[in-house]
Image (cartoon, rainbow, N blue to C red; front, side, top):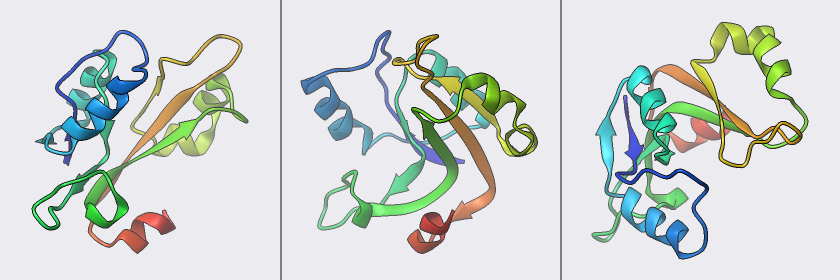
Length: 131
């Protein structure tokens, strides 16, 4: 599957100007990758965008209008569901590819992502919005 994967690794959540640098850099980091490889890269501290982007007027930017395709859906959970609840949820057990905690995760405040892989890429943004 294709997505954007940053080349830099981090040991803590990027802050300030580093976030802008990631946004500028990652737009040109399209990569073909397996789910197992993606999970490994995430554990190394790499940022990913679960979509590909198209060039418009010679620029590829992280903007909705540049969205091209997507096969990975990553749900960002910051509240309302604990990691334990997610791991016990039947739908998540049956359909999620993997879960991972974010840099902001603590034992008191669970912050994690649930990653789903679609059987095939979607090419219509309206389909992505429906999902």
